[in-house]
Amino acid sequence: MSQTDNTTETLGFQTEVKQLLHLMIHSLYSNKEIFLRELISNASDACDKLRFEAIDHPELLEGGADLGIRVLFDKAARTITISDNGIGMSRDEAVANLGTIARSGTREFFSRLTGDKQKDAQLIGQFGVGFYSSFIVAARVTVLSRRAGLPADQAIRWESTGDGEFTIAPAVKEGRGTDVVLTLREGEDGFLSSWRLREILRRYSDHISLPIRMQKEEWDAEKSESVLKDEEETVNQASALWTRSKSDITDEQYAEFYKHVAHDFEGPLAWTHNRVEGRTEYTQLLYVPRRAPFDMWDRNKKNGVSLYVRRVFIMDDAEQLLPGYLRFVRGVIDSADLPLNVSREILQESRDVRAIREGSAKRVLGLLEDLAENRKEDYATFWAAFGQVLKEGVGEDAANIERIVRLLRFASTHAGNEQTVSLADYVSRMKDGQDKIYYVTAETFAAANSSPHLEIFRKKGIEVLLLTDRVDEWMLSFVTEFDGKPLVSIAKGGLDLGALADEDEKKRQNDVTEEFKPLVERLKTALGERVHDVRVSFRLVDSPSCVVVDEQDMSQHLQRLLRAAGQEAPASRPILEINPGHALIARVNAAPEAEFDAWASLLLEQAQLAEGAPLDDPAAFVQRVNRLLLGQP
Ligand SMILES: Nc1ncnc2c1ncn2[C@@H]1O[C@H](COP(=O)(O)OP(=O)(O)OP(=O)(O)O)[C@@H](O)[C@H]1O
Image 1 (tube, protein in one colour):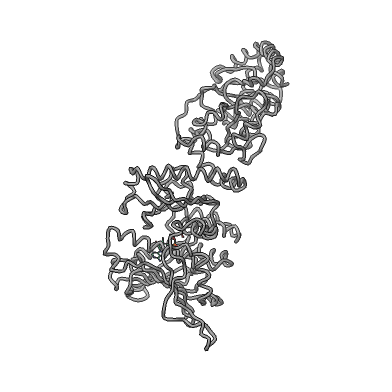
Image 2 (cartoon, rainbow, N blue to C red):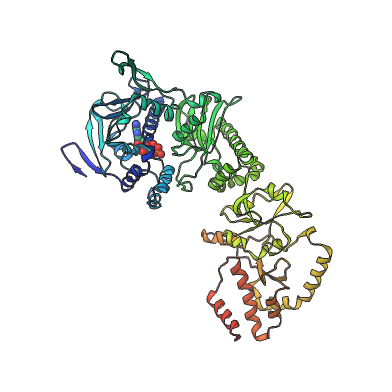
């Protein structure tokens, strides 16, 4: 910090702000006019905040409850001013809000930037551009602001040319609120036009519920030019978008409103807009974003939609209005019943809120069902961004579990790595006589897809779901059947292909099992405590052996996940299954007694490796393999 005179302080921007400014000026160059949308959006938020604070402190309005935004320009001075009479900023608020980015994960976000303009522009989109977008068109930005409630001589003047530093000084401002004055860069004079500014405002900010006023302009036939009048006029519709009737709102207006409430740069994927009447009355305008925000998995991140009560803004991120598994939804809920002084605590208890939450969850599920049915590509986009979050719903929302289960999508041996298969698709492709839905869980798609357990299913052409997301094991504890068909792990318990194995095959299998009994007994003795059991398996085709767990035991994959998360997991011993048709099994069967223990260990250890499980003693494994390769047990 340095002082240029007694009162003006010069401060540096946070490093990330400097990076953001640099990047924005370069990557959003072709989309400059959005600065106006961002500044109007902030001005509108500032008025909403004042109106909300004034519910408990009416003196903040200082007698002027007529909230609004004004856009002015001055051709001679080459400035555009966006002025609001909202909440304003104190000195400390200005320093914190206009010099830093207060979002956790910001540093990590910036470390992901690549230097590739196009990719970075998309990343910034996820981040939200906000106030700093002024510097795309302005060489200098001056903010004159007075917080509501403070006297006129306690205003502040913030100024920066966007090159790393800003100054802040005390100032005098008669009216409360904020004036943002942009002194344009060379070559940006095109914005100094009433026509141009109105056009931008109508395109991007028509949904703003407050009046946006500009000086009236009229054509003067004598002078043959348009002249500014002393009167003002409102240039937007100035009514809350969600209160308008659906048929009066264009898709573009819905999209621009979304960008405002969601602080998103891109338009939404889908939305649902309804007025609900009955015991509780409310309007909901809910959006599904296209992309997950960069900090979606941040625990401290706020979630949810904005709550209004009879058009008065009450709070952002009212997470009580939707169940947690729909936390990606953005938008507005405007209640006719809640009190204006409702707090987050009251929201938690309120019966009206419960009704809103249940009603909104149903609406969003309906919207997703519609996407899944009629806009498959968009549903795939949704699923890629938020599928993992939606899965949480099977544990969280028992009332809607059937609907949620129908919305789930999986990778499978038929469909490949993309998660596109619904349980209904799976059932429609089931083989004659197949009465179960088969799946395998693993850490990665590659591990799942090359699991030895799949071999017999591939041979018989039976589809298997490949589950590799972290929440999958947890999810499966809630989804145990679909359409009357149980979901069965192919790596658990004995393999029972039921009606899919014919009588001849069953008889042959019994004979083989009998024939291999002595080998099985020898392996049990050799492996002792390391296994729970050894048995002959008909699920293997190309692999000599595999490990499975007992029906009621926790899967090996889940055991590993729990241990990785530092939790206790019961150490269940695996069952070793051997493939009687494999040449290596014949080799082990014929092995001399001195070599037998080494072969037995090898069968177990390679089966564990194929599963993606770590070995207890990898060095001993390597030595054993080498000795056997060299024929020196
Ligand atoms: N006109 C204004 N009146 C009062 N406070 C303002 C005004 N403009 C900006 N601010 C303050 O500065 C903060 C930062 O603004 P900025 O536009 O960068 O981010 P944002 O609006 O919070 O989020 P986003 O960038 O995602 O839109 C705001 O959250 C607000 O606290």
